[in-house]
Length: 136
Image (cartoon, rainbow, N blue to C red; front, side, top):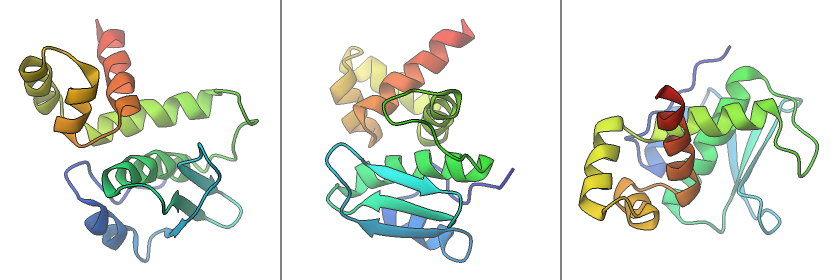
């Protein structure tokens, strides 16, 4: 397994710098609804250039999880084991548990404000909540 060169407290620019020389990351306009892609054959991570930096961070970390395992992909529209793992691990890399608890308390558990406070997407918050629920 490859070591992911970023951590959740990094901003987008620092993440790109950390990936330099480790894995090739390219910002490019992707089709609607596609935030990022990883191609094992070329070792290339693509991130949609039309997103805001905080969204790019989430997409990059998700794709780096695929890269770390050398995932070859799933059928379009299917949530396979590799995709579920990437979502779970990306959420854990992006969200600090103490910061999550603080955001949950300050927002009354409302997902969108929590995502804003944590500088991640709503999907990442929902994925992190699933991780927490699975620990109970």
